[in-house]
Image (cartoon, rainbow, N blue to C red):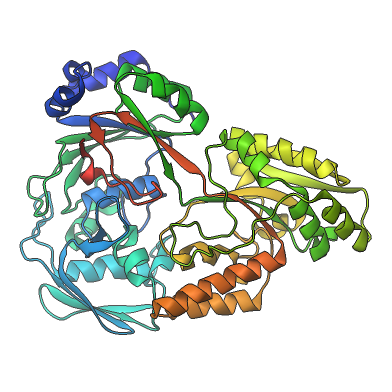
Length: 516
């Protein structure tokens, strides 16, 4: 769905917020004059209830409306206290916490207590009461047994088994947002778009397909955000975004290299490159016909030229990825092999496998980068005797292509997943239990599953790092994956604005946006 905001609509919104007069001011004067900024997102906001959020765009708003026990430092994945005065891992399966006193929920719902923490975590991590709807993010709280309330401001998280990434994936992320029990129970179904939090901002406006408005929370007990208001505008069309940046109607956006590069010449705008923690690869269905033979899969891997594909898909701006975990992620395999194109060896492997005149379907999402890379792959594979039919699909059809029985029909595909700052979060989609869901390769490795399970509960970081590397080695041996890139984020923003996010730029920190 494309949302187009005309210049008149954009300026009307700016005028209503008192922004129009500041748009033309230079540098430091503009920064000092602005009490509000406009940021662009490319997906629709839908649900601000932590248990039922629809994706990272909702979560970015949530982390500014709610508090968590712990949060990430500005522009970092390192954790620091938020609602908690203290968080202590007292045993491999217990985490004790003590809240800071006097943290107030908005809308008259009173002070945060340990009972609110218990309610928030258990409504996501435990089965709902009879007739209730389970949280779509229950997996974030895997191994949760219960949350004990030991005092008005103290409690204990009790696990059924050790969990290495408990703090990063559950406590300090979207599923760790602390809601008011009274507010959720009073709000009913309307709570999804009228959240009550204790964080740095409140949600004062929301309109489907258009965006939301965050306003500084005067009762927030933490550091005061730099801006009084942040206007979040949903604009899916890159060309509309380009025009809005040029005219001063929006102040921040993340764009593809091809759209962002021409904006370098626009006075007052800064364009910077930031590595992503998304990961893109070509996968192969190991259960399908000739692709069952590892020699065929290795031949395909050697027939491709990853650098050529990236030059076509990302204008040479995206870094090459040689293994599952990007360099910023704990457990990255820095010594992973870098496969270079070798036509002679590819033909030799096909001959050994007794395969000639092969033909495969390459399924891709209808996006320019994927289309460009697919055409390059098609030409490269033709040179070793493999014909490729490119099947370009729209989002709804594409994202269900690997599900259930339908997934058995896949041959080759280009796929992109978003990451988190944890190896198990990224590795989970390739377990055998994900066959028919997100493991489109249909790769079944008991050894990989075992390493995943062991790493999930391993609290020794050195041991856990090695388990993650060993798991990536198994993926490499399978030759079911041709790793392409962890992409690049092109940040385009006013020169006087300093945006903030976790490394990878999927998780934005609205409360840490400041004047440069």
